[in-house]
Length: 333
Image (cartoon, rainbow, N blue to C red):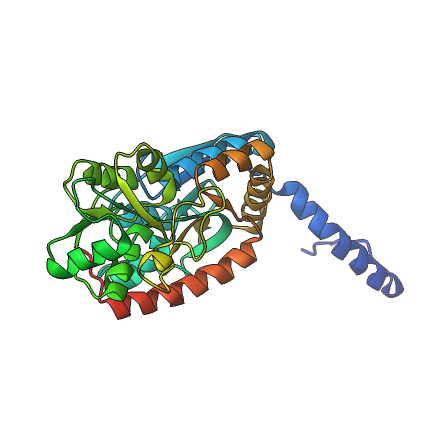
């Protein structure tokens, strides 16, 4: 039995025009069918504990982004292993833009410092935005006799391996700042990692450790209150808003410089729409006078910029800290 098939035949001369119109309509149709983002709250997984420099920044910027996104940005603190717990959780997350990571230098340090890291900081993550940076500061216990960087170095040389420093965890900027300090000063220090910067600062206050190089938002309050002795800032120049505080470099360790940074990453494979939208709203939030003023008052320097710029920066940081880890012989303890 024959089956008749009916179809409208397009004249050959009209085919190019039909194809051109179709090519113009397809992107619009695809965009119309794509679901809006975000259609539900966005979860920002923080590498360190509540009250840490990462956490403070995440909550400030996240709250300011909520109106523009039309959805809340929820901060989910996953401290542990110097950021490794949070990082691996986001690495395994569905790449739909609803689970993002906020972290810092540990993102590129952990893979070269820790023996069993399962992620590649470039291959397994999509850079979203570099939010802000913050210098570290050198603080010591009030019980310690050292009152300057030079005196601290002299004391450490007289007691090799005895002086302990705390950090917010293995691979954090606080850890590596102290390792670099010890290498450049030619002294041997002992490392005591905690789950976050605030806990490390408390250990200095309690006299459990001799020193720490925390991010400035975690130390500014106790240092200005005289609860710890602050010996210097890790920037190459003095802070304009704290000019009486010397740099570590000028106070006894020439050439020393460490600046922590805090950025947002998405799992590899995340579509362009969530990345671009989050980047745009984060940049908008960072430009708000109230947000900027609050960040500056707590020791942050606003960065912002494109996802592409952040990606290039991450690759530079990976190269830099790979060289530092090898040069210092730093180990996770």
